[in-house]
Amino acid sequence: MNILKLLIGALGLFLLFEIIRFIRDETEIEAGTDFDWGGVPTMPEPDDREIYKTEEELYNELTEVEMLARTIYGEARGSSQTEQEMVGHVIMNRLEDWGYNSIHDTVLDRFQFEAWGVPSITFDANQKAVRNVNIEGDPAYNTAKSIAEKVMSRSSRPAPLRNCQHFVSRRLIYERDNKIVLRASQNWMVGMEIVWEGDHVFLV
Image (cartoon, rainbow, N blue to C red; front, side, top):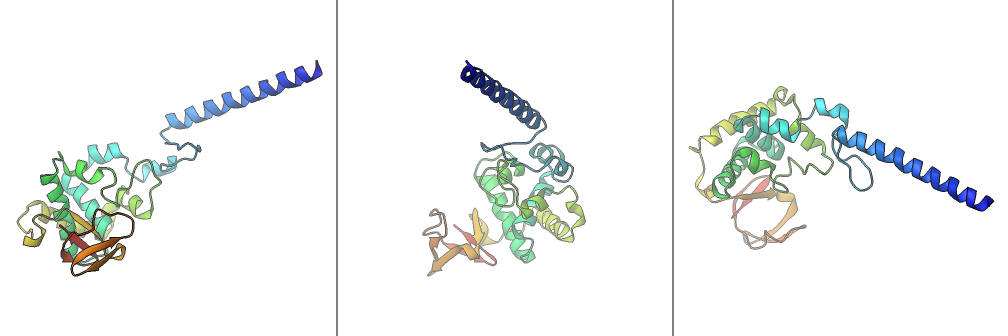
């Protein structure tokens, strides 16, 4: 009888614990935090939400020029203005050739631009910078915005970039005879031709 009482008591405690954990998780999910299977928050903390724009805010509050500018800023703000312009042209090429409806759709498509990251994965420092609501205070962003406005006119697209839809950081590739022969983690670049080089290489 004592053993049965102990088992019933243990079962009651277990159920109580599960109910408390369920209520806690439901409350946190309703607050907007995405959880992985381990129960670890993977989106910015609640205090960050006033600092970093959500996906919905990006779509609803930012113009096409601003989205292009933020992407250029995130991908290449440490590079020359010429190279930032090249990045912008690649984005516009994808918009025109890949059937996207907007620059927002183009740059926020999953696994396409490192600057934006994946919403279900913790953002790194650069991805947070791209989403920062106060980005206009950074001179590098203002430069990227001027470049974005120029690129969107499509009047300055260099001939080598007319069909270019890919670029990658130079540190991630190995090349021989102007051909990509090895990539650190992805094979889709093997055999592609380099059409322009800087801190990034641009490929067709």
